[in-house]
Length: 335
Ligand code: HEM
Image 1 (cartoon, rainbow, N blue to C red):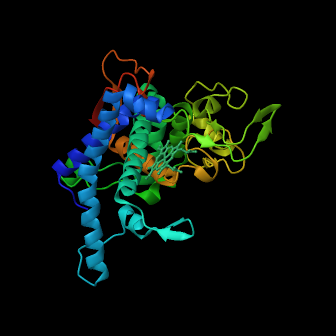
Image 2: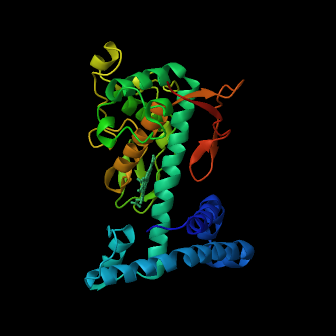
């Protein structure tokens, strides 16, 4: 829906406060009954955050439901495209032999999860990629050459008046293996999530002499996997070339393909999106977004470090693992 700025800010504010604080409420999970009494104020705070989310999301969900109903009755509804909420409204859950619809509260939770899972992760990943391109100008230079090789020079104000609307398109990024390699290398070296969501073991298993009991909660050390020196040569270095096949590495740029199975269906060398049936459902969209944004930002602008800044890659845990000192860069138009 075409929301105005104020509506977007309301959603952003409710979601941001929720994401930044959610870790503090974990204590309440351990002793659900006692926790509500002992940590009374924290419990009240959680309820307030939830209320704020409902206040902004429920009216939007309701508006969507009535729009969809009007559309089904044949009314002319401008530019109707299927939205995530529409799919939730249609969903029927099997429960004790019956089928039931989602409640409004459940829809709020799912929309909230979708908004958080799909935005914070990608924007964090984008910042890490740009930070590395600023820190290593030769990598940025090689990427720029690849983009120009496919698209030519980006239009400048002088060459096209104020019409600088040309973009590196979705189809173009498929011909840019080095771009793909830069994105993959950044997801390996700086995965936005250092753990997946907690998973539960469905049956007892033995792993290298250790018994993992049924119902145990397990998690996977995503970052450590991508930094394993038995799998990756000099794992802490930022080297996109490692994702190019031999042909691409020897020919300088272009030519080769960045072939890598990020879903882990054949083998798992890194898993920034998780693996298996609970793998991130947005991984393909995230990769496309990242390639698309990075290609366009580099095609139009040269990115350099702010004076005297070495680009500090220290990490800080927020809802994702972000740059402790956010990237400060100078950008200048190409050409
Ligand atoms: C660079 C960007 C992203 C990264 C690194 C990332 C990573 C992850 C990871 C590690 C998980 C947990 C997987 C597991 O439990 O095994 C996950 C789950 C999820 N992601 Fe992403 N994600 C990204 C972008 C997106 C986008 C763009 C969307 C939606 C448009 C999305 C939607 C979701 C959802 C809904 C879940 C929960 C799935 C479930 O509960 O089974 N993610 N993501």
